[in-house]
Image 1 (cartoon, rainbow, N blue to C red):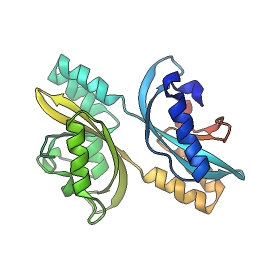
Image 2: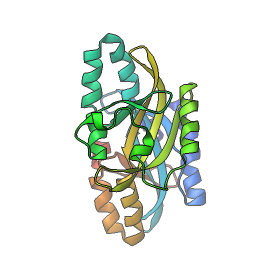
Image 3: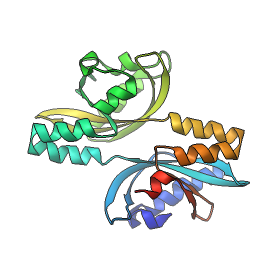
Image 4: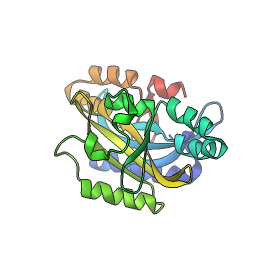
Length: 239
């Protein structure tokens, strides 16, 4: 597994995977980089969970590409038009917040994630507006926001509510940035429904897990207790 991440992250990766095998539970989110087959290196965040596959306990690692934030800062310095192009065409759901937590801008992927068609319905609102009732600690979320504005990247899970009322879990990554001269935080939002489906599937049967694993839109692999990759899904193989 270490063949695909930089050497400086090897120890942290080993520790995260070992934690899964020792406790048969989730590992903490781990920020690292992924070495692609074309030689490029992209920033990622990963999370491992314990699964049973072909009778063996394995670590299922799910990978998220978080390269948008670095690209956005570069494009923002070039021009508003260039920034808006990469912002709106990103496949990752992204929204920008001010220090009061209000949404300043929301891209197309985020609108789709929440089931809205017009971003003006969300501009000026706060996360409470799109939150599942009674499922989030907003005091803690405000702390995450404050820490992010102080330059400490944050990550947390959030229960959201679509425009049609459907409730779903998501992972939120928060990093400090600037937006046309204004200090802001960029939020990258990943729907965790597929991960939850995979966790539920492994409780039912391995055949169902295999089907969901291979059709997942998130890159993922299965790692044994010797830190060897047993299986990678199509999304990861295509990277």
